[in-house]
Structure formats: structure tokens, C-alpha cells
Length: 371
Image (tube, rainbow, N blue to C red):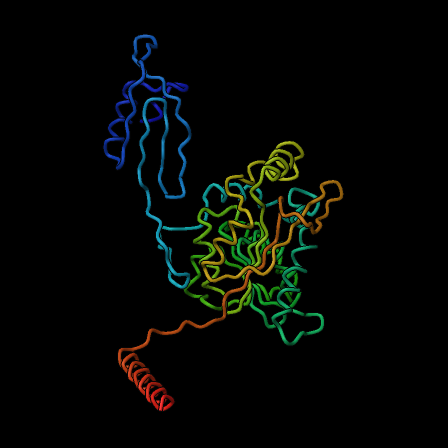
């Protein structure tokens, strides 16, 4: 219906009336003075330079035009402590558009010289980064299997490019991915190695779907090249908090939101050089280290390390960098402090009596000193 109203960048009179009716139903509607109408053939139309709608920080959907501005409040954002569920069956961190993109690429993941060559090469940095930071929390190390005894969940595991190396280090790993085709290929790939077949388990699901059954289970959550694809980052971080043990680690690798990351990560890497398939990334979803920390800290995850990463397309290798203006890796730890229960009424009364007795004793001592 709405599509039929549009003709290029011009909106029919019926379309204008529809928008005005919609505006009247929306809260906080504001109408600006009308513009001069123009004739198009036998139909009266009004020129509207409509800008794309956007979702603001206050969850307000806005449409702007030369002749009117109206807004609809879509969802109220409220603060919730990290230990409480913030999701329901209708909420998800998964973007359906991202699912379609990666589903089309499922057959290319294990080609080390192909489309996902940069992800294969990234293991040279991210595997030691995860291993070394986890070993700082472990008192005993098993020769040849340094992560033995640790439980890790690899969120957005794809076809297990990172899951399998972590399993070879001795960890028990669960790899989850919302693309069922990815999980099928990952299951098939690990079946060729009997050792990995015992250490790794795969599930086709999103993180929020398994929070209840895996609450405070894992020593580490790995979200490598994932947060720039989720639809609700704060909800995703809260789910990570819930599945981690106290003192557990969250590992993230992602892309910074800078002009340089747009120029090199999207324009050059996707559109010019073809290093990454077109449409893989959306610059608006990139997140800066500062923004990421501002979400992690209030949700009970203390940032320990942020390290810049740089990919050399000519050598095909990743290197650590002093600058995090492009890619970076972050390590955060869940607080191990226990929550203190609210004191009961009787306990408060007892504390008050003790305080009064102490005050009385102190007063007596003071009087004696005067004498």
C-alpha cells in the first residue's frame, strides 16, 4: 500500500494524507508550516525530501521532511541489573539480515586461501591472546593441554575456525551459531578428529536462548568478530555476564567505529580489494573501545586489556598494533564479589541497640576523663 504511494522521491497526495493521519496518532507530533504543492500531470503532489528513518539513543523513530516532522516512541529503555533477564521470547540479539549474509557464505569458511583467509590468519593473534589471559587465572597447567579443565563457549562460532584450536588446547568448548547450516558443516568437520569430537559440542542457537540452562557455567565467553553483527549489544553483553562464572573472562575482537575503519574496512576491503565479501559489515554497528567499555563496566564486567590489531592484506598476516583505530581485542573479567543480602528488620534493630550502647559507653568514658 505504502509502496504504491511513492513515485521516485515524490509522494502522492494520498500518501501525504496517510502520513498526516499517522502523525496524528503518534505522540509528540510536530507539524511545520506546509510547503507549496506542485502539479505532476493530473495529480496534485507535494515534494517531500524524506531522509531515512533512524532509531535514536532514546529509542525514538523519527521521519524528517521539508514539510513535516513526526516521531513515534517505539520502546522505553530502562536500566536493569546485569543478573536479571532482559530478554523475552520476542527479543533477540540476532539480526535476520546478517543470517542471510552468512548463510550464503557457509560453504567458503574452510578455504584458508579464500574469502575467510583473514579469519584463519587472525588465529595467530586471538588464540594466544585467549590462552595467555586464561592461564593467568589457572594454578595448574597440563603439558600440551594448557586449557584442560576449562569450559568455554564460542559465540557466533561460524564453522568453528576458532572453536577447534581452543579444543586442541584441552578446553571443553561449546560452539553456538544462529545459522544452522554453519553448525552442520562444523559438526561434519570435527568428526574427522576423534579428540575434538569428544571436547567440542555445537548448537544452532543464539546466546540468549541458552542462558537459563548454562547460567554461571563457563570459565570464558569468546565473541570474536561478533558484536559488530548483533542487533542489541547491551542485551548481548548481559547474556555473556549471566553465563560466566564469577571471575570468568569475556574475550571480544571487533572493529572500531572510526573514519579509518570505514575507509579501509568497508570501502577498500569490501568494495575495492574484495578481501571481505560485500555486505559483511555495517559501519553503524561498529563499536569503539570506549563505547564497549561503557557497556561492559555497568554490567559487571571489568575491562583488563584492549589491544590494537592490524591486518596486512599484502602479507596476509595480522599484527598487534599500538593503535586500535581499526581492529582491536578486549579482555574483560566478571566480578567475583558476592552480592550482600538486605539486612532484616531484627538485624537492623540489633545494630541500632549496639550503636546506642557504644555511644553511651563512649559518653561515660568522656565524663570520666573530665573528672
